[in-house]
Image 1 (cartoon, rainbow, N blue to C red):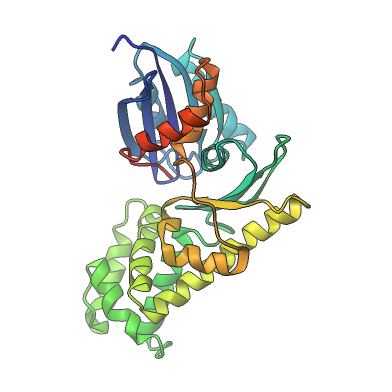
Image 2 (spheres, rainbow, N blue to C red):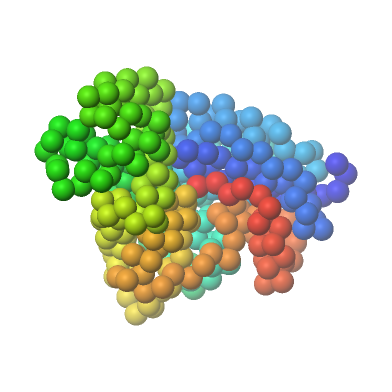
Length: 319
């Protein structure tokens, strides 16, 4: 490759995406690896380093959004070191993944970005550059409405049904266990579920992955699954409400990112409390590309962003 290019990295809790973009707006390369959140991913540095070392020598600038960035002074310093050691003389911008996703969703304009992937958080920005965050406290005592919490609540409901503590939601048993690849008979499911749990290599990611089954069941009209998503919607709506309260008088629109919010059922349930969302202009990786383009002196105007949106439709987005 001899043509100048820029790059962006979207480092999420479950997966991390690298996109390299040529100056003509075409994608030169894309690559995906596991999560790079230093709070719960022991291999975060190795994964991030692998992506940074894969950058072409013609890279003019890089925009990075990393999960957990800015939440711990110690880990923040380690993330900065990992980036600077590998980029050396290449200019870069570094922020957290939700800030980057917010910039992508609104093209740098004011708004509230609601993220629900493995974790959950809302990020609000105004026209003057002021911002605030709500949530993002992690799975131990936060991440309400996240894929992890939905998956955990689904497992809790399953165990209550298996125990006989819950009889009214028995319709959840057969379709959910089938989605998990477990037997639906309580006698067989109980040891199989314990075996599944006991052999997990990364419990948080595995539990979060169950949210997509709950979403699919809710879309099919499974009442217990709908109730699980309704609770998640209520939890996520409080993020938006709190962010608007912190930014009074602006009536900021909200948009969304993250695998959990690909569920139309969940978005519609939130909309009943917070108004209809604004579809994101770009996937989260786009925020890093906007930042990198401006650092490189490219004309990242409205036309460029619209073209980038069409380009990124062909590339998987991280969250």
